[in-house]
Amino acid sequence: MIVLIVINQRIDNWEEKGELLENYFNKHKLFKKIYIISLLKSDNPSKSTLITLCGSKQFKFIKLKAKIFQLKIIKYLLPLRFYKILILNNLEQFNIDKPDIIKSVGDGFSGFIGSILANHYKVNLFISIHTFVSPKIFFLYMNLKEKINFLLERRFTKISHNSAKRIFVVYEKIKNNVSKNNIKKVNILYNNVLNNEKFQKKSFKIKNKLKLVYVGRLIKGKSPEIIIKSLDKFKNSNLTIYGDGPERNTLEKLSNKLELTSRVIFKGFQSNIDLIRELKNYDAFVCYDKFFEFPKAIMESLFVGLPLVANKDPLKSLKEFKNFKIIWVNSTEESYSNAVRNIINNKYDLKQISNYNLMKIKKLVSSSYDKNFFKRLIG
Image (cartoon, rainbow, N blue to C red; front, top):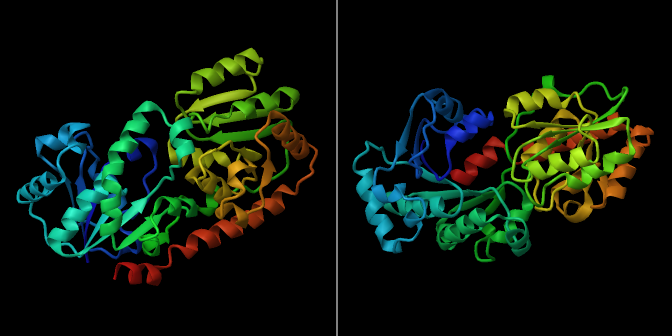
């Protein structure tokens, strides 16, 4: 089979972040030839990166040469009929065999371009959606740039959903962003994350200090401010924070004000593989997340075997979290402090929690990656 993939995000960013997964574009190695059309001028992935993602020697990376696609915002504002002319004229410059299916990473602009290609080649379109956005998230937690991008993408979302044969979402809540008319097209395909046994935690004995770890973008709605404040009462605990973002400076100032600089360690960005190697050295994973998501960072911590301390609102209401034993807390300093105290005082069987969650995450993810089921979906 031949697949043509449309992407509107930088693959070379994945490489820089160390988030490359083998066969990401070729799950189950069903495709003999892979074409990747990038809608971004700035994307320049290496050949080794593409080999990792495609798992095939037969692939071709294509950047559209029409100048209009190189204009960041203007390219989203053309009359809809113009896109078909531009795309099909560009295709004539490349030697592309007729694909069997079209896949779009994303459901906005890339999904719309995918719909044009699917109609041109008379094949099915498959789109994937990776984030959930509610009015609360839009108004409270997204910055101005993210709001603008979201609104620009919305122009194309309905068309891509209506055109798609299948819509893949990476967690259940994203279904809320799909209309009732298209909900039957939706299948959950959880994020594929590293889960090698050599990265799994083996020892659950807390030594001199409780070692907590936080992983994520330091942004509104995910900032671990409350977690940092909760440590003020416990001198025999520390927190390591992996991630960068606009809230980092505020968090560092808070840590300094509370005289916690020796116990709150900011690691910044670290490649995904290096991070996963380090996770097993911590005692528990703590998070604060208001985005209704089942993120890769939490999935990776569960595969490593780290017990998870998480805020009830909104995570406890999500379908995925019902499968696991979580140390639930309210979104308050006191509640996080109580959780830290209980872990230090051995109120939880961390090994039993780890083993149970590891079994559940393996089952949850494998259920969405059954090869025969996937073949039937695209078949």
